[in-house]
Image (cartoon, rainbow, N blue to C red; front, side, top):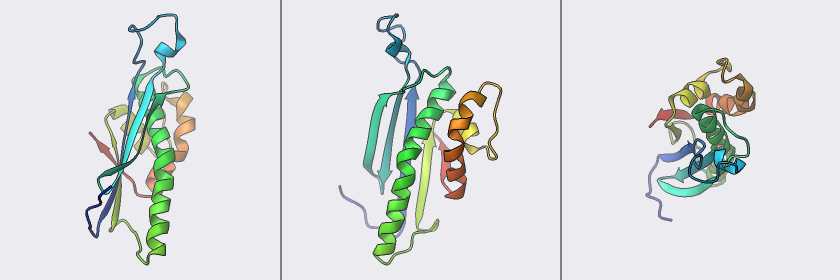
Length: 151
């Protein structure tokens, strides 16, 4: 891994989901064919440090739900990485702040972006059933000053 020396660090997260990706391509009676796939890449200073791709454990009922689940999974990894970066910088005598480190999540689903940026948690009639599971990361996005970007 080669880091480009700079006074400004970036931590970027790129979550995505493939809604019911194998439906119609595999056996129609296999329940795993309707599962969505979660994937994400997290980069630090432009270098990939964590990535994962796996089937979601629950069957998503919409593209937005699959994307929210992917966003939630990536935040479970991203938030501890932010804390580690801050602890390491403090141990090295450097203080990280919003002016020296920018954290961004790059999301491609407009519905997931709206739901993730809504605080206090707002719901639509179709999103209430899974919004309860996402309150924790929405609060963290606001508290930590994480920038959500549409890609």
